[in-house]
Length: 254
Image (tube, rainbow, N blue to C red):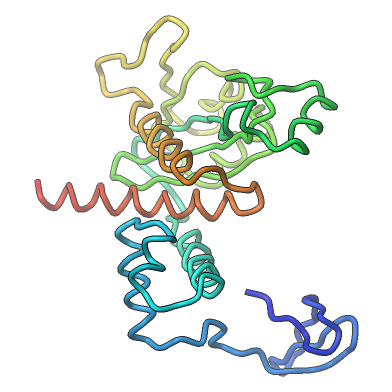
């Protein structure tokens, strides 16, 4: 969370060698505050417990004595930390897929509609839409990772697979051209052809786990009534962790 200078109201600063910060506008130097939230540990634990139970902001405000501004600030910090709790590498059998996030055209803001019309796009389903593309990787051990991307072509997808998936792993995907050539980069590539209503080859090769995660994510995001793109990555990171926690709890019960 960035701190605002009381003199020039700037949020941009340089980090000095002694650990202090210096604002770029007024050159005022200061030591960053480690506790930006400034609430008691007891209150923070109460908020975290409500947050883990997936209660809405209004529900938390009814149960916790805190202002809405401070609560939103705390929830943002929690979501930022959750986006960092992702495995660096996936191995074994992994599923890769892409999807789009965004509401119906009639519910879009006027500014979004104008921008989409200028680019010649609309809010239709599938490729060519003005919605936000998302790429995801799911490992069969219950870990999942997703990231907002600018496109869904080969140059957008395969570098992320090489960065996140260990060589020699089995990569399951659909027949989208963006995955062509994965086998040449040291992976075992297995395909399912959705255009022919093929969703599994009956040998364990499918992307149904990741498709289920996309459905879960879209239901949760739609229930929030719309999220601005600049904060969408935080909610995606939150849902990654929630989904993984639910999987581990179910596995422990079994």
